Every structure is written in C-alpha cells, then in structure tokens.
Image 1 (tube, rainbow, N blue to C red):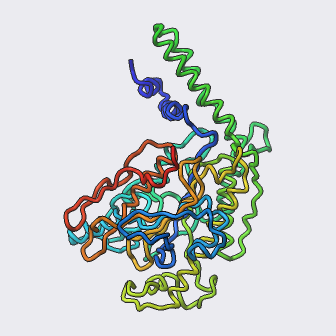
Image 2 (image 1 turned 120 degrees about the horizontal axis):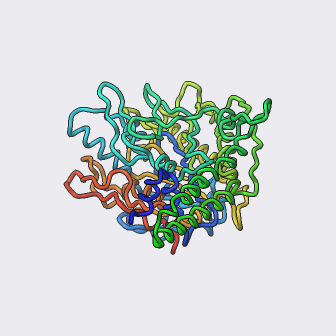
Image 3 (image 1 turned 120 degrees about the vertical axis):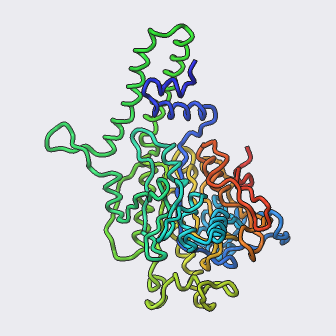
Length: 490
C-alpha cells in the first residue's frame, strides 16, 4: 500500500497531500490559532556594552545564565536599546551571546582559498537568514547561497487563499549594490515591496474582474471563494476512485476524506482568523523614514488579522542622520565603524559621538519594533491577541557595526502560541573556538536559533543551513538542533 503522500500524488493532488500531511501531524496538539512570524532585519549591528544587562550574581562568561524581565518596575531597568520595549517585557525573550558562525566559516573559507568576496557586509547579508555559505560570484560581490528561513517557511505554510509571505521595507546598499536579506534560492532575491501604498493594494486591492460587467471582486472575496476549490476537487477524485478499491483501501480512503473535510472546515474558520479584520489604511507619504516604517507595521497587523499571510520579513532602513538629530554631513554607516572603543573597523578612530549615535539608532529601531508589537497586540484573538500567537524576530546583519560576527543579540517577542518562554533575558556562554584566528571564544551558532524558529512554526527540522564547521584549532562547532533554553516547559 502506498504511503498517503505518494497515494495522493498519484492522484495529481500533491499540494493537497502536503497540506493534509501537515494537518495530520498537528491534529493532536495544534494551537487554536495559527502561528505567525515576522523578521525585522536591521542593517549593521549593535554595541554590546549598550545591550548587555548585568545578571544577578555575575556568573562567569563560560556559563549559561538568565534573568527575569517580568518584575522590572521602570523602563530604565532595561538596557538602553530595550527601553522602548518595556511595556512588553513579559513577552520578550532577549538573547545575548550567539555567533554568526556560518559567516565566520565563510570568511575562513575565502581566506583559505585566496579568492572570493571577503566583504563583511556582503557575507553577513547572504548568511544571516540562510545559515549557509554565500554564493561567490567571480568579479563581483557574493550573494545569498541558499533559500532563507522566511522563504522556507513561506513554502511550507502556503495554502489556497493566502500569500506565502510578504517582504517589505528598504533596499539596503552597504556597498555599491543592493543587498537583500531574503532569498528564494541561490542568487534569487525575494521581490521587495518598498512602497506601503503599493503593498496595501497588493494585499487588499481590487484585482480580479467579477462576473457582472462594470464591477470588481475584492481580494478578500476572491480568496474566500478559492479556498474550498482544491479541497472539493480532492473529494471528487476520491468519489471516482472509491469503487476501484477493496475494503481496506476504502477504509483508508474514508480516513483521507475525513482529513480533507477537517482541513476545509479549518480553512473556512480561519478565513478571517481575527474578529477584527480592519482594512483601514493611510499610505500617504510624509517624507520621513519613520512614517514609512510604521505604515509597513500597520500592514503586518492587517495581513495577520485577515489571515492574508503568516510570514513577513521587514528590511529595516538606515535613516539619514538629520532624522535623529545628527549632521547631514555624517552617515550612520560611518558612525558604526567608529562606535566601539578598542574595536573600530575600516581604519576608523573611535568617537564618543559615533557611539552615542549608534545607541540612539538602536533606540530608534526599538521604537519601531515596539510599534509593531502594539499593532499586533491591538487585535484580540481568543483569550489573547495576535501578538500572543506570533513571534517577532528583531535580528541584525552583524553582531557589531564594526564588523564582528560574534557576541550577537537577538530579540524575540510574542510567545508563538506558547512555544517560547518569554519575559527573560538569556546569555549564552562563549565556549567554542572561532573558525578565524586571533578571535576570542564564541557562543552557539545562530543556525540553532533558526532551527528553534522553524520548530516554533510547527516544522520538524533539526537543522537549518550548515550543520558543522571547524574551529581554527580543528575542533568541531555544532550547528544542529534548537536552543532548548528558549522553549517554554512542555
């Protein structure tokens, strides 16, 4: 007897097979509401001294440690970049000490080969969401070498009647070319929508002619009409096949029919998952970067509340210096290189003004993340809100703006249907030898964070991207499995 997936593929219903297989796996303990994910990807990096929080009893750096954020009583009790997130401290999971190990291994491989693009920005952008080696391109900059985590999730979570994912934000130009963070495959950048009004029209626009001349059908109506069609087709195929089967085959077929019906009912019940599918939107530009970012955040709320997608990636901007009160003659790219005393880059000298500028820039980004959390938390869903069923991932291109790839910080917000144990600040120990010489010990590979995110979205993966690289001393750096400390108790 053929396995269910092969059986359905033989009927020409491979897409339904995939949907049904996932539905069957998740039936016993599936959450009442869909899990969703947002990647807020920040160019450049952070200043560790600004982010790191002092942990009780000051455990040594080679030991895992954590502290609760829930009992904090004032915003200033958080580290400076996190202070705008204070109202959401019970739903934060702040992570210190990860390493962009794939990028370090990439750089080590190029150094060993004596050829290839060594630019820290290009390697970091290519590796951040893929956890894989960059695609080296002779004579030009490297680019993404594998499908990124957002697009892997997009393909797996696809279903009739909603977008696989949306990629919004700003083109990032760290050098002379735009460098996207999201990839459909090696060298295949995910299309980026940079205008909020265009993004709104794409989500909710009147795009499909209705049967009555002179009228149009809204996308919402079109999506609702399409959702059951593939399932009805499956039921028709079953009806034709049933007379050809023996008793055992018919019993299995009936089980499949029941799964199809349950899936159809599930899709029907989540066509507007939230009771508040508010499509009010003002996409009028006012010339400021901040307003554009917030318009995209409003679209994320709309997309999730109306179940138009479950995966969104936002490429965050690098604002002009005057927007944050710094001279027009300066750039935040330049300030990044000067921002860490004793660890500058590109021949720059340390500048206290540059350090303050990057601290202010991080607070500016935190304000936008906080606005996104407010938007998602404003949509009631069951006994909680959309935020409770979502994970927002605030992640930066580099660990530091001075081109380091270790001591990285990540913020997760929202519990993703109870998968993550939030309200905590966790610090990972630095115990692995770096793939690059003359560097300190590094923490766990951020590939393991990507695995945790996959599993939070109900995927069975235990690896994502590279599975192991070697330290400069020949020791193995494991990159498989999730970060178990992030999980909520089962």
